[in-house]
Picture (cartoon, each protein chain N blue to C red):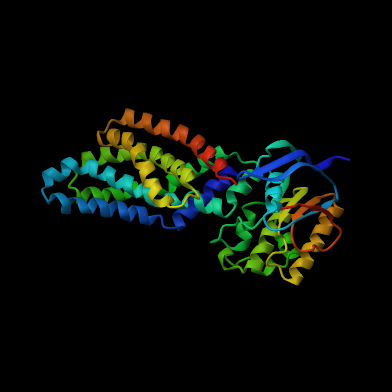
Length: 183
Length: 205
């Protein structure tokens, strides 16, 4: 089985602090990995390393096409939501439907609540069509209904051969492999 | 993606406060007669230089919205994940910045030249020099914006960085030395995407 994400003996150091050492990791199609650990243990850094936004001190990271949702919304704030999403990918109607934000299509991004903004960022991820999803604290600001929708789309994504890495200190719905980072 | 980025940045530039640097430019030009007196001969002699100083100071205003908002909002990260090279992002931003800044400035130079008692000929030559020089100025602005993005007190740093680097543009522009002005402008435009690209990469944490 080919991996969508593979870490080989990866060591990551940030601002002089060793976050983890010799980490091996392989994520295949349909798999989901939850990264847990206390605040400051390097969950977000691991996500950014997987995305290629950080470079490891040692080791190798291989990745397939991926998409990332972190605490940044990365949508033009003055644009209506649908137009802002369309900057990143062509067809966004179905994803907006799936995340329950279709009725917000004409609302400027800056007027969205934080939960709606989170849904919008997740819609950007889903609409990208990338096989590997990297989610940093996907449940932050989401209500119960939003969390349920997220669980459903993650399930669909895995069923269609995708993989997900999520950093979260809250339990995520569904079956997840766990990776615990120590402080 | 690059074309989309240029269109987006032009839209943001124009719908944002595009008139602000231009109004500032006219205002600085309007200060000159107050400072040196209303002698038309003197004004028309120092006019082109005064217009250039006004253009340089006006160029400082938009710098902090060129790169920093996109860095803070994660747009630069997403562009990287979409496989767009940082240098391409910088080049797109230079083109977009020039489009939303230079044409308005060239138009505003007409009323500003009237304030400085410039005749038609020196207005035309100043316009040509500005047309050439603004390309370098826009490149410099994006490079400085990228280098200072995310730094505390970036606003005051930008002036300290940009103005000395813009001195060659000022010298050749105010002297109507078009070829030398074009050479400096070209050099800045060719180098800026690499400086800005490296700065964007280095700012990524």
